[in-house]
Image (cartoon, rainbow, N blue to C red; front, side):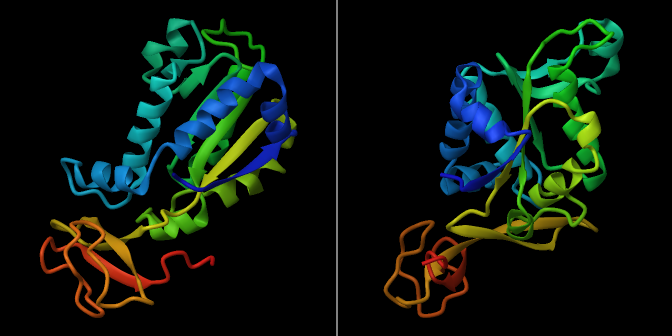
Length: 249
């Protein structure tokens, strides 16, 4: 399961957990995050057609699969007016919506943070433009600074900490409750970025082996025995990093 933390703006964390109008959908969001394993992220990342630098798109696709499986509507237009719907080519569109909650999965540039916060607010407030959906609260799912560092993300990517910082100066234009969910780094691997084709960069999965048991562990990818202090598995080529399996303990 993915680890995460939550910041509640306008008491969103309390409201979503305890009010019947939110609790079912809120728990579906958390269940979707917790359903995503490190193995699923690795398989999705390594299965991409192009060489990816970060695990952002892999997480995006997995979140979409988990939420739509639970009945969430993907790429929901906020407004019914064609000028602000299909003709706008996605400018006024949410990543997901269901019942009273709208969701944005935000792994984009720091300069987009304000817009990511405003979109679920637009979906949750009355407007002069006819609405296609009407929610009453929003959720932003993004990367913590730790996931940004360990997941191969661009330096310019906005983080959970950035979103929380933006809430105070934008408070007067964000009347709806918002929950900011920060995804933490995977427990069993990290991404190392290296040179790719041409001027591009690519991410490489490095799985963790327990430093307390060198020479006694199987490769976390293929199960073959690892040599002492091996930097890669001789059988499958998986990159290996020796460290405490759970550094928090």
